[in-house]
Image 1 (cartoon, one colour):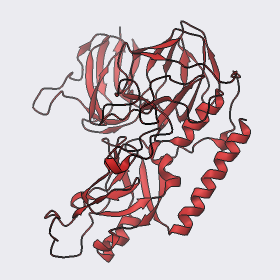
Image 2 (tube, helix red, strand yellow):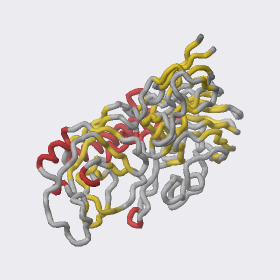
Image 3 (cartoon, one colour):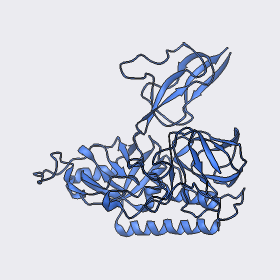
Image 4 (cartoon, chains in turn brown, purple):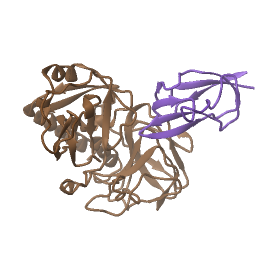
Length: 324
Length: 81
C-alpha cells in the first residue's frame, strides 16, 4: 500500500487542515494553502475533507502506484496522466497498481491537491499530518518529497466512486489578476496618507520567491512612513516596530518597498509594521497565484470581511452537499 | 527538417547562464542533444534546469534572459535533422 516518488516536482508536501493551537510557541498553522481545494479533492475520493493529501506547488510530481487506488486532483489546472494518457481534473479516478501518474504543466493556478482514497498515512504530529518544512517535522519526514520516497496510503473509510466529479461552479477560481480584500491595521497609521492611497490603487505582481511562508509582491509604488523617532526596541528603518505577533494574512513591507503577505508556514512574530491583513476568505486565492500573476488590494472593513467569511462557508456547504 | 519548441516546465524567471559571471549554457545556432541544459528557471528560491527533449540545432531562443516565463511557454526553437 504505497506510492513511490519517481520525480518530486518542485515542492510537493503532505498537507491537511493544519496544526492550529501552537502559534504562541512559534509553530505555525501549516496545512494546505488552498484549504478549499484540499476539501474538493478529499470529498471527491470519499475521504474526510481534512485528510492528508499532496500539495504540489507550480509543478507536479511523477508517482508510481504500488497499489490500486482512487485519486482526485483539484486546485490548479494540472492535468493528470496515467502512463502518459491524459485524465480529468476535479474527478475521482481509479488508478491500477503499477501505473505511473505524471502531470502536465500547471496551466492555471499555483497549487494542485492530489487526494488519495484513505489519505496519506504519515504520523500525526501535534494533531496534524501537515509538513512544516522550516521546523523539519510533520508530513513525510518533515520535508518536501524526494526521489525514492514511499508514501504510505491509509485505509479508505468509504468506498470511493470513480468518475464522480464536481461542478465548475464549485471549484476555485484561477484568475491571473486577483482582488485581495484587506482590513487595514494594526500599523496602517504609520504610512502617509499618500501611500495609504497608492497601496490600494497600484497593481502588484507576485514575485518568484513566493512560498508557503510568505508571498512577496512587486511593482507598486514604494510606501512612505510618517516621520517619528523610532521607539526603544524598534530597528532604525521606519518600517520597523517593536516586535509584535504576526497574524496569518498580515502584510509587512520591509523598507516600504515590497509587501509580503504571510501565509500558513509564517513565522509568528517580528519587527516589521503590518499595514493590513488579507481577509481569511481570500487566503485560498493567494495560494493559487503563480509568480507574475497580479494582485490588487481592496480595502474592506470588519463587517465586509465577516460577510465574505460567511459566503466562503456557504460555498463549502454547497460543496459538501454536492459530494455527500 | 522538423521544428520543435522547448516548453517551459514551470513559472518563474528564465536565465540563460548558470551564474551571472559564467557564459551562456547554449548559443543560438548550437547543436544540442536530448538532455542538454539550455537554461534555468528560478522560482521559490530554487533553480530548475530546463533540458531539451530532442537533439538538433537550437535555432534561437524565444524569450530573453531574465524574462518572466509561464508554464508551457515556448523558450527555444530546435530544428531536428
